[in-house]
Length: 115
Length: 112
Image (cartoon, rainbow over all chains, first blue to last red; front, side, top):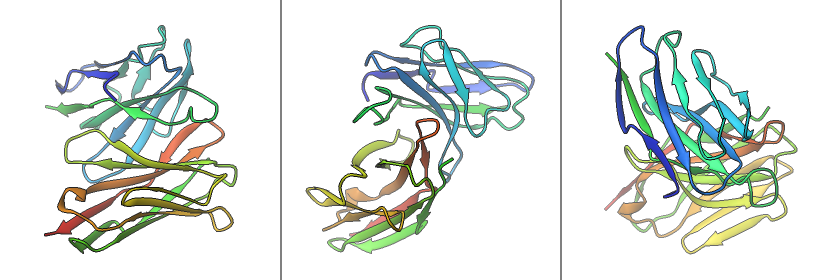
């Protein structure tokens, strides 16, 4: 867990703004993931990436965008098209496909609030 | 894709009692089932996981059982302590996209 960092810890967004959440890992993991968690709810998959320069939409990708230009970095942009972005955002990583490689470890999260 | 359902949504036990949380999954090919514990405002922490080649796994007071035929798995916590109070999430691996699908969570409260 200590090898995954997210910044900022708290983020405030005005309506109409795009904001970018940072996720970095030094675990040499191939796969990275973004989840959204609403109060009292489970984790919903936004985007995931199994390898550098490739990523896939999850269950709630609308209004979000990602890039995976480097193995250690997977930033998430919350665009103005996301109408209800207030939530706790969690980044995770795993080694990648293979035995024992699906175990996901989470970063500390970013709490986004729309003003 | 994978669909994971989790029950109960809340669970209150007395300190020292056992707690059981159950999950069902839909993806017959799924072969990896982790459990996470999340304290308020914190990240989910992996507490135990099981793969489909075994039926049970234990780690001190925590155990997980898996029934592949019925497509369900359970978390068992024995001799509960107040510090076990948290939200617990089960998950199943969606083999199509190799990403976890999470249950909706169980809020466990251990009464001293």
